[in-house]
Image (cartoon, rainbow, N blue to C red; front, side, top):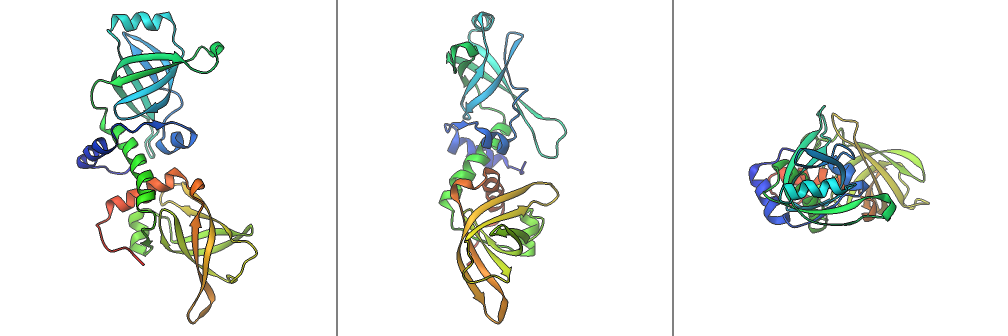
Length: 272
């Protein structure tokens, strides 16, 4: 997880406190939420659950609860605790968070025979900084991927190191043929590549690019279209290729990764 300052935590809470995050498969993967080890606890009893959605102020939880749950709620004056578990990169043990909450309501979830219920709760205090950080990074990256979509970062050796890329050398696939390329610049919405032996008018303009992250096995698969191919003066063997990603297929992890770098670096004029 990226290093987040206390000021950033405060800003996340102010800016995104009421924004609800739904945990579909992509968000679960991007945040590291475990699909097990999440619990609803009340008066010494607990019920396994999965997180349907949460903001920094309230949550919706799916669980199989019966009369014993409602009995415990009466005893606790509708107060309960949620346990969320997240997998954190490079950490052996999961991050376990406990959130104090007040029960607001319940409704059936799915078919009646499933026995599942959707519980709505409100947090009784500000959640742990770790949860604010996880949600804040996700929400800020989604916001900035639109607001700062065209902001380009020139890929130098120094940027490769600071961003956490394995290399500016990448592999792309054009017409299902792997090619070596060099990253010239990157943005939320696209990239510029230097590719050898590139024809001015390839039979297909579809391109798949794989970017590797340093010191991990992680990589980003970015699917896009070549929107411009330009020769490079006095270098007939190579060409500059501008790529626009398919917006619907940009991984959330890539948005978070790129946004983390933009948040860390000092403000300066955009690279052209």
